[in-house]
Length: 441
Image 1: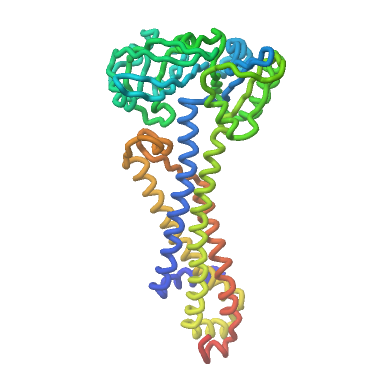
Image 2: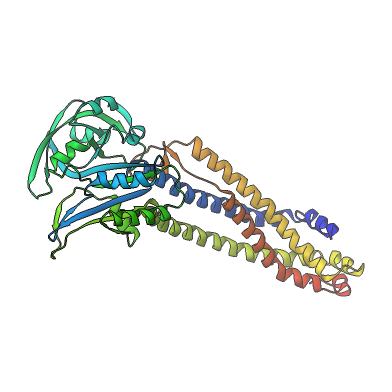
């Protein structure tokens, strides 16, 4: 058997033009599929990482307090919830409260709808690492009670400068309007899509501006040192918070999970029934990312369809190539049969010729794809602006090749080749010696 494998390897490039033409197809498919898988895995990791560092936790809590059928949307009595979580996971968890509102700002004849986000600057410092200051500093922002950080795009649009004061008006939780003055203490740029465009404020300032309850927040972000088993941890917290008097639930869909993460200004709404309860919904970051996964699955499916078309072309090429090869090598096949070579050995020899060919070109394609990935990920820098930032990390496109992807592509290519080589090879192996030596096939 080793002799026939050796012979098969030597025969790979006997017909160099045919072999190269077929091999190029394997080469292109390998590059396409690895780039596609690497892009998908990279986007998932980058999207999740950026989301967690800016706009969500490993677990995100939102809710509402219902009193006599009227609901104050937001997390009520968040210090109590924080204590329950920290007592259950002492030293293993960080709980951060955020206060959010959206308001249109008018300044120097320009208007722009802005998302304001209030944080506890003593505890919630993660966003500090997500911004690069063009003017001002984090320390200046922290020191000013009504200080805000605005993006460079927002500052340019509204013609804001450092230390400018702006009067803003926003709807309170009771439906009326309240005004306040903000002072620009920092202008920033960020490569994180979820940071771009927000106006970072102090938690207490926004809470007072919206005339909210001092114990209320828009959302709570829960971060674990060990993120394994988020669903199990959520189930435990759902039970503990239920015992603490809350009506707890999970999002019914990915869209509901996104609503939990994007919960904005606490406000009143009518339930229509006389109900008194405190509600909490807990979403995992995996549920929020699930919608992105669906989009990427569609991208992968489109790429897979393209690869399937190319593989179909390869299958036809294999069949034609092998029929021509068998016809050209009739005397060789006849000689092998005459000296006692069995049908299965000839079949295997013909199959392994194509398998070795696909192995060489697929490995070459995967190597080329890894080189492309290395260049794009490390040397190619793109401007982190707009929706493109979803796919970038510090201006670099995130492509993550995995051993699983490499193994899958290689395995599929070899199995595909073996299966589609079998049928023409079987015909070649069944040719009798006398027939092979006397005529073409």
